[in-house]
Length: 224
Image 1: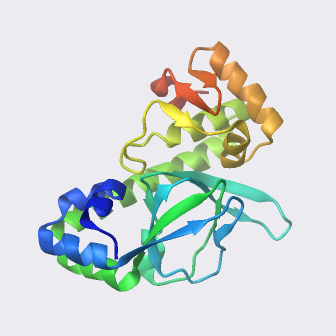
Image 2: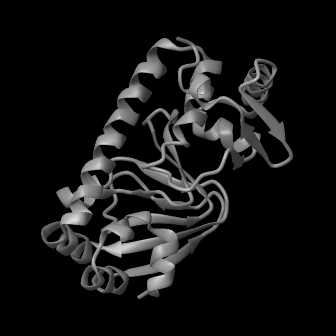
Image 3: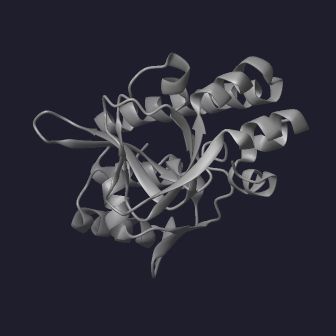
């Protein structure tokens, strides 16, 4: 169980719950830490938790039978993921690996299902979350097939600033170029080249240990 204050800090969706629902939610959540490069879970595993990022950074993706990695999206502080697998009660269809030391909030499936069946506010959040996630993956499919590497990287960064999927982010993103490359599915060297191009065009500013976004709208539509 976590405290009510901790739930408020790590879960933006909790503001839509009443007091009884908050008590039920926090009773079903524990926190767990993962080291950098550690798999949180692998495709095909049962992981019966709805999961929130308390701190750190993780990558959602898959590895093909031939060993080729494909990144779907990054997971940053404040984001919650895996509601589809929990609702369908099925094994995970993707891998999630910590890119740096990461701490997660894990809500057990019985608590999630209780909120799903009893909380109007929780269901409003889930509809928004699932709709945004669908849009995110449609966009991923589109730019993965039609855009060059710089545009793909620009869209990958912009995707981390979805206010519903990643609440509370500021214009400065604490992330290394190696991590950006991992989220974009490209090498660190290519990420460095693309980031410098985006900086020259005035879309972002490279800083020690991160980037500051200067023009989010242009990043979102880069390559059109």
